[in-house]
Length: 76
Image (cartoon, rainbow, N blue to C red; front, side):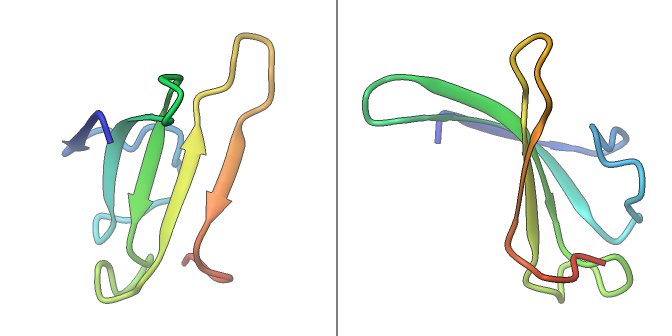
């Protein structure tokens, strides 16, 4: 990982989040040197960080749709 910064007041692309969840701005680097940036939301809607859930949204190239990854079937 190249960088990760917790966002205290900004929810990034996550409009349906709760104050129990934590949002990070992340930049990662592949072994070949290519970098990818995006947002990661950790925790569940009601139980916050007591839930093992991470949702990651990759920044799309201009004109493309965002890519969404999730580790939980029910992130809320």
